[in-house]
Structures are given as C-alpha cells and as structure tokens.
Image (cartoon, rainbow, N blue to C red; front, side, top):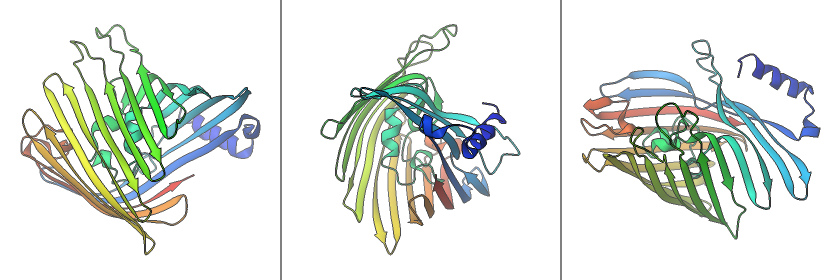
Length: 336
C-alpha cells in the first residue's frame, strides 16, 4: 500500500468520509514502545527504542441474512521509532471471507492456527519480550510467506464453530510462482479445547516440500491453566527445518496475577538440535501493570544462552561463537 493512501483512509474514517455505520467498520490498532538494553556475547551492546509490531487497520462485517455475514480485515504494520530511516508500511493479516453456521472461511494473508495458538499462551505477545523473539517459541510463529511462516500468504483458512469448547482450524496455501521449479502447497491443521480457565491445543503444519525446497514440517501440543490469581502455560514443539535438521523446543511458564496490582511472569525453555545436540536455554522474567483495559506498562529481563558453534535459529544474534543474548526492557503497550 502507498504510504500516502493509508493516512488518507484513516483520516476519512475518523471524519466520517467513510460510512462506518452502514459498513459496520471498526478502526483498530496496536502500539508498543520499549526502551531496551541489549548485551550480546560476540554481538551488539546497545540501548535502543523499539516499536514491536505496531499496527493500524480496519475490520468489519456485513449481515447478509440467513445467519450469513461477509467479514474482512486490513491490518498494516509501521514503525513509530525509525520511520525516517525506512518509513515503510508493511501488510499484516489482510483477508476477505464469510461467516455462518459452518464457522469462518477467509482468503488472503492470514495468521496460521499454529501461530494463533502460540499467541494465546504468551501474556507478553507483541511486546519487546514476546516469547517468539526470545527462544521460548519457534520461528514458525513469526514472519510471512508461503513456506509455513507465522502469517501465510496466498492462503485460505477455515475455522469451525465451537462444539462444547472444541474448535478446529485449517489453512491451505497455493504456490504463487509456478516458474521456480518447486510445486509446494503448504497446509496446516489444529484443534483446541477451551472451557473456563482451561485451554489445550495441538497443531501440525507442513510446507509440502519437494526436492528443490526441502521438507519442512512441525507439530506441537500446548495449553494454559488459569486459576485466577495463578496461571500456568507452555508448549512442546518438534520441527524439521530440512531433510537433515530436526529440532525440538519446549517451554513452561507461570504467572501471578493481580498481586498488589501487578502481574508477574516467568518463562523457561530449551531448544535442541537433535542431530548435533546443540542447545539453547531461554528464560524471561517480567512484571506488568494494567493501567486500563487497553494500556499496559511492563518491565523485564530475558536471556538466551547458546552453545558454541550452534546453528539454532534462536541463536542468530550471537552467531557461531555462542554465548548469551541478554535484553532488559521497559515498555508500554496500548490497544485501540
């Protein structure tokens, strides 16, 4: 999208230039800004400001009658901190679909069920200390494209209605380039159960790989148990990055909620290469306070400790020398 077009659309919506009532359109967004101290063995020592997946978008629906609705979402990511150095606006989830008694069917660029379930057990999701950036969740929860990244492009996704707390989800991606020699149509399927404070899920994704692209797939199980003041969550992943590289990643975490108005979170995880036995351990400790339903402040420290010579994706910051990647963050998150 043009950098000039998005502000025009937002301005038109806010001033009534777009008939929001008739179209049932909602303007929404997410802002997260943090001050981060970075200390990497063999890498970067720095202090930075960071805007983590800041975005703005539109979503809405139209009642078509007989229990059927047309639904859509257009979400755009931007950087409030470094806009002068780049200034780009990138696409996030953007889709059009139908909802009814069959559930929801959406077509476009859509977060996979695999990614969606991971976000549900991370209270620091879309902050500077989110688990998918700090070794607690694999890279399949991030990125965008046609190779089972967290956001699947050129994709159709179906989500079932809830049957006594059980819900199914699946996506199928079409290969948009038939001239590159590969013929991949990645797919994924997941199931979840939610009842009161209990959440459990299982997922599988595959890139439908061939001799050119290589085989990649992943499966995981996980969940959360929320008892009010105390909560426990975690997941186990087993994934294959190529025909010769298989890794496992697991993490467990716990939270104490509402203690003196604060929420405490501690997560610990291990990622291991099953071939080389290289290993990375990760932990995150954070405290947060909900200033309102939409605004949260937080502070915490996170460390990823990598073996020497490892090629694990969680260790990309420290490189082949291994060592520790430490980050301390103080931030504020606001949703509208």
